[in-house]
Amino acid sequence: MFSAFIGHGPLYRSKKKKNVGKLFTPAVTVATVLLLAILFCCVFASVIAPYPPNAQDLTQVLAKPSAEHLFGCDQTGRDIFSRVLYGGRSALISALGVVAISMILGIPLGLISGYKGGFADTIIMRCCDVLLSFPSLLLAFILVAGLGRNTFNAVLALGIVYVPMLTRLTRSLTLVEKNKVYVSACVSLGYSDTRIIYRHILPNCISTILVQITLDIAYAILDLASLSFLGLGTQPPQADWGAMLDEGRSVLLMNPLLSLIPGLVIVVVVVSLNIFSDGLHQYLDQSQTALPSFRKYEKKLLKKKAKEGGALDG
Image 1 (cartoon, rainbow, N blue to C red):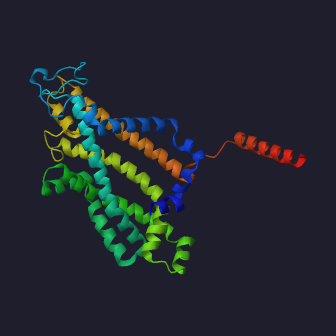
Image 2 (cartoon, rainbow, N blue to C red):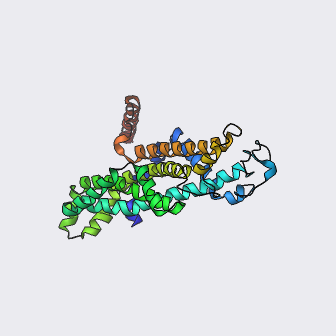
Image 3 (tube, rainbow, N blue to C red):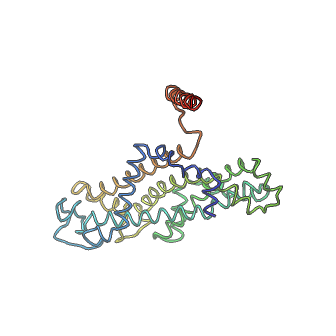
């Protein structure tokens, strides 16, 4: 299945070494390095963090940054640097969970809706319209309030909220692809609908879906932080970036780093993901590729003619 995505879809050209430079532009390179650095620190938080996330030292309440506590301590003497690392692990895993739920439900529904049409398309689209008629965060608030306040329910609620957007995107891509010649050829060869959808149509839609998924991870981090900030997501004393923002409100004037550090990390991660997504879109979408300048084209043409002339002389 994975080879089908790479071998027949738009991602196939990413295997060519000459295209690597088009993806890793200076901005995308910086964004990728920042993301990898933050991801590495969060994954290995148990090794990098100098203290457990919930370890309290009442002699260090609201302590300023020092050699022992890199970012200082909060109002209960917990090390802010350690809690940022562990909170990042929770935020990133939860964001991936949100996107996984939306992919598992949204992509198949969009493929079926776009390819089958008719009654199935009507039912799926009307359900999406109902979900999209509510503001996304408000709908998540309602679902979390009904299911209970914890991380799992917050991830489940946001995953459901993200399904309609991915469904509609996949459906629109499928509507374009199903009218192309290769789909008609597959039908004439007697291929089943399942094979046509998942082996031929989906690989040609995966590049655009991949860009949207990258953006959804950034949105999920923001929405999860919002839920935790309001007390509907991760519950104390578990470390979370959104919960740390809420904890720092009461002592903002005495120790602004308690809110500033997690807020800054959220901004860096979200902006980096948006830059990476934009670079990925320009790389995978051939229509976004910049044409060479006339001077470069002229040089290539002259080199080609020189080589042809040398071959004729030989």
